[in-house]
Length: 398
Image (cartoon, rainbow, N blue to C red; front, side):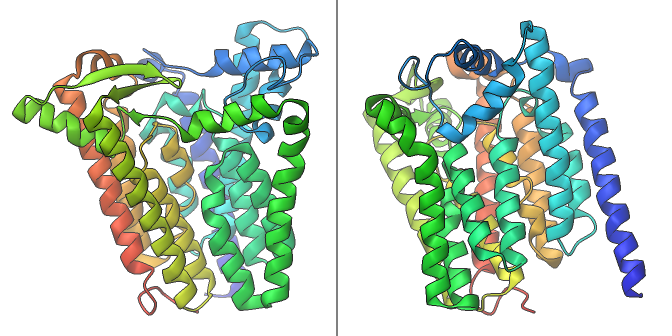
């Protein structure tokens, strides 16, 4: 195959991926996808309207997200509009970011099927795609990776700092990115790039912290101090013990989610956090010990983020949106297997969210409880697959 033929195939794959994404997005508004939705857009609309009224975030009203998330709440609120119009504008913004994500995956991936997977993912996961802003940090993370593999390390770490200032999870990838720059461009360039990551994030957060240090601190602490969410791996294990052995459980609504309360849940939350940190750090070390190739970089990023999601004490359905563009970037047959596992996790989530979520949260519904555990076990399997592949000498090198 000539280089020209390969370029045309990549272009066709990207175009087909975009078409699949747009069809998937449209279908999310039809049939069973449109029923029983649990949406966050009213919260975003309140934030946007408050800002258009001249109120300052964190100082004049509480915000539970980092400052770089604010633009996607504000833009749909500009001008006179109803709640329905806000929702349509927000969905249009997210759809545009989804298209950008497909194109960025097409640029980053060596596999023609990767953009198609990202395009079809909304149908696999369901309506949660429409009413969460997670496509914004996901797209920024892809921009950072695209710049990194293109050799623009300073811009890459700056973009990653922006992504982390929109939703904290991209910070998990920063040590891998800095290590990659150190190995490929030298220590000085790595230190400059790391400084840009910190500097960009600080430049976005600090002005709000100066105006309202307590408000910004409360927003960040609210995320760090969250209890064991009912959809997490730890909660899934406790729910299984409840149904098998009659373990007593209590539900508590706080921090914007439904959680398990009590000593056992608190202990499980602590164990989850320690395990999450241990596996993520293990991925950082494994990447640092091996060659700094493009394939290992993308594999390590996918492995670290999967570990962060799978073992966390909080695992909301929208967290899977973070994984959708990264897992298909894993090279070769291993990437196909990993994407298959992710697809299974997406579908398993849709089988109970949103349709049986309140039965799960309020009644510890048994079918939903087992579906939660199955989904989380699949994510653990996906994580272990990628971590094992990240060992030096195991991943494809170029």
